Image 1 (cartoon, rainbow, N blue to C red):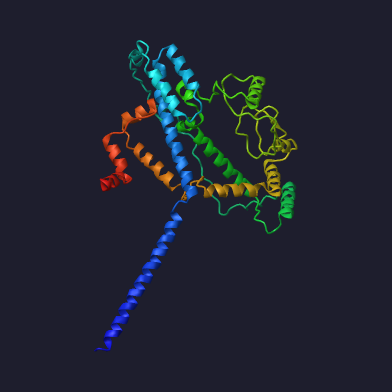
Image 2: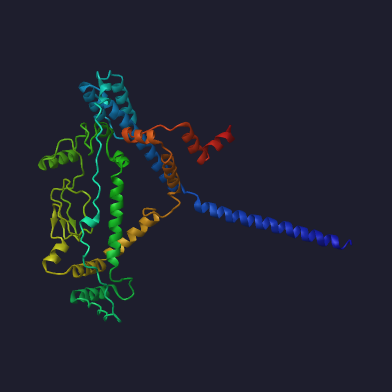
Length: 409
């Protein structure tokens, strides 16, 4: 019996050692998993700057909507004074200067009778009488010919597959010789890559048309005055660059005060996508030998039109353009860029860097779904609305803000 006691002790010590080792291994594994999902300093700084930009833009948009309402309540002298004050803002990020302009304009007396603008004569309601659809038996004769279904015992012989044209065969041969058999080339691969590139461009252009996207480009001066295009500030630094820009605007007979990017002596050789500066100020900056067909100004000898002038069919022209993309390596560059964008969550893929942003976006979408008819109407008319008590409580409760506050208290 006394000999068994040391054996039990050894087993107990072994179990304790095994427990400590397992606990240490689990802690190390959990720490590794936590390090993987934890944001690095660079990622944290990027997310922090992004959220600060969101906060700054939201305050700017709110001030713009309040300033727009205030602008139309002022008399002509007050409107001119508010516009001059907002035009003298040192830089776009200075919201304190803009806030002082709005408070100064708000201290003025509104023009007389501005409350009467809300009321209009009541319109008479018109009762629309819809004509009933006539019965078909009055318009169609009874002895109309019926459709006869053809029946046969066997099918006709299938057509032979179409033979590739000489232009396609030569283009494929040149691509195989230059790229080699070890490459990932396959006919039609450039068409798929180009379609993805066009879809990405359409998605980005669609996001630019959203109401909140204009706040990033417009000054508070433009938001208050209701301008659709960004304007130049009246007070600008007097240097060689601004003088050259004003000279180019004068040569182009551009409207005073309008703003857009300018390209001077910057031609584009063999571009694969249209220029985003459509109709902009582009003196001596044409697009030469472009791989797309565009009717805009500044296009010199686009390749699709050159191939069309030779009498080629559409499939042959696509084969020649695909051969050029493969030989020049443009297709590999486009695929690499698309892969990078996928990793950066540009095409809807999840990533650690955008996890916080996605949660914030989903929170605002969920909040917007709880708005009633009055809030939605106010949001469309004024650009902002106020939450009620239940919505604030739900927003805080869904994201743990109330539980954290109760713990601290």
